[in-house]
Length: 276
Image (cartoon, rainbow, N blue to C red; front, side, top):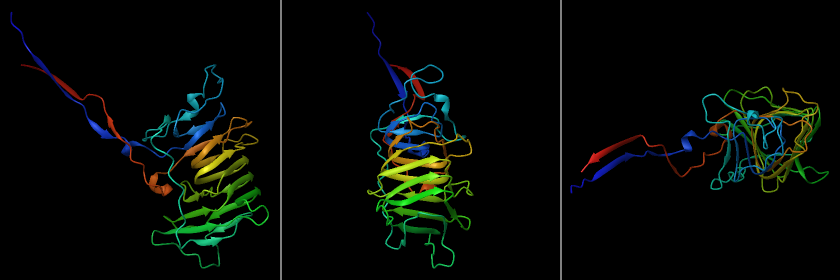
């Protein structure tokens, strides 16, 4: 009796997913999503979101057609990643300019002021809390606006001591196609409210904040959040009209280092049977 021994040679590429990961449009630890919640980009969390009961298509869960693709970057996905937490709250540099709570329209950098950018062409503002409630760093209503008057390549960073309330017909930096306004919440930033007909172009990073009252009323496709929102929790389930999020910008635009992912095992690229 003759026996033979064969050896199988297999090439399995090992690589990092980090280079392929685009910044999520919506990143939260917990979700309570409206069935019509529209996201252009990725939704990321530590676990799969608790999805709405029934979609218009009759299938339990959020309608995947609402999660649109962005050309040329991996997106249009719901990602559950318990190993990559939302980046920590950013700390204002010691050179940040102290700014009173923003409770009415403002232009940044402030005209007729000594506001100066740093070596990277960025303005840094540490925003105090309001005197009335001692709760909000940003509380805008009606037609209040945040306008940026920036040279190309410049950015404005707002580091907040308190909560965020966009409730009205605000236009926040909508003259920009990219999020050159970054709003960084602190551990004291526990609430984010966006409703009515607010339209915002910004990166909002508030990892301790619970986002609620997320509502666009009346529904208006031109009223949305352009940039990204990263918060502790996102609750749009009770909204009569969801507030769309359209992801724009990259990690450098957001001022956040790209998190490193564990190496990933890619599909087998080559195999060969070798007779011994």
